[in-house]
Length: 358
Image (cartoon, rainbow, N blue to C red; front, top):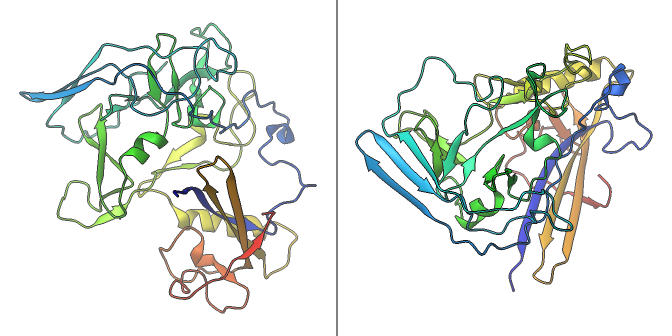
């Protein structure tokens, strides 16, 4: 009998994991602004198989990589089309698209924007022939039809709002083209990725390869060690500069692409830990500051039912941090009963206390 581990998440919560009486700090109405598009990361179930056959072909001609595809996935998808219960009114149909991509790309001195008064082009195409199109054509103030008065500097972030995405973070354009807006779960699962192994999954529009999870420590040196890849973007802190009329206002929540800023060296957990420590210093709480890690594991059984296990480790925050690297907030979290942080305890066994609420 086969079982599948669906999800494993690890979360640091300061003071308490849940406070039912607390105010929602992601609600910009706290700042006198109305959020037209609240955070929504829900995904439709992928229960549908397609009658179309996937077509994908790639050849090298001179200095160009030439790809033809009908943009039909090889995995299950969500329920699309004008039918009861669909997550998007557009039905999937076979396309006839060609892509010419530079076979010998050179790193540019300037960054190319994917969004400039509207989506410029797709980010790239995966080896199953499905486009990666991270940009949603949803500029402020989200009214139709879109005109020159719309503010494209504040465009909705596709993966943070409800635009009818399925479990592959994909949906369908009015012309029937199925495309990804984020991580394509079932496609990646079908490739059976291995730990610490680079896995080529597609080609970016500029000609450079797209790898999943792991890449070279030095991108242009294939003799360098392999490391886990991380995003070079983080959500901004504070309030948006808009007035609520020409541009959105309220706290940065990740709903808009402009809510995010790029870092030079990937995810900056040192910055994140500094912000956490800075925030707790502004509260009325007295040191030591209580915190806890929450961990959730979900097992999906063949008969369709799920088993959910949630555990917590209680502890305190420490400053300055003890050590560097590690996972996330490990250097600043000290579990009860130990004199070392998680980072220093990586060779020891830590016991989670099972709980139903986290």
